[in-house]
Image 1 (cartoon, rainbow, N blue to C red):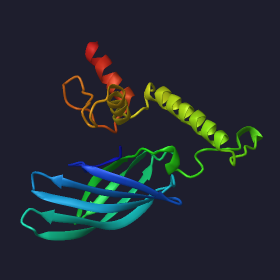
Image 2 (image 1 turned 180 degrees about the horizontal axis):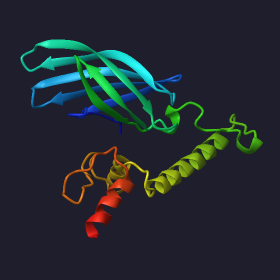
Image 3 (image 1 turned 45 degrees about the horizontal axis):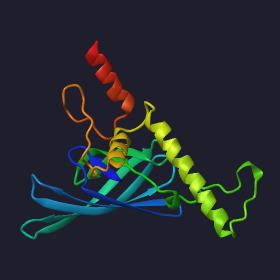
Length: 202
């Protein structure tokens, strides 16, 4: 599940593709209050340095009118998990905060599976060997995600999605809330939510 957020509204759909050292985010959504749909593409480098990317965002109104604007996105990834990108979105003379929460499959990141760990060379020409390695790596990956989910720096969105998957609930059906019953932002960290509830009990 991939999501992008502006200061005032989230996108409703984001498709992520990866090519070489580039991420491409195809997004679309609807601004209910204004009766218009929007779509566009964002290109990001797999780099921890600050980056600037330009692109077009397209708007389509219910009356059939269409228009497009050039945007400028300036920001950076939080770490080399490439899961969280934050920055400023500049469009039509206005600047808004921007966040992207991304998830990757094993197949989506090149060289994610290191087949030469501990100097052991593995022959991948054998089908059974490939299957065993894939199963082993998937188990390790799932275990790592469960361990990270319990940490304070885990994203709220990841915990919500884990609950949905565990109980077979629809995507987006689980929301974690603050003590005042407001919904905490998906990019917030679990530690933040935990502190708010602990402080509430004092």
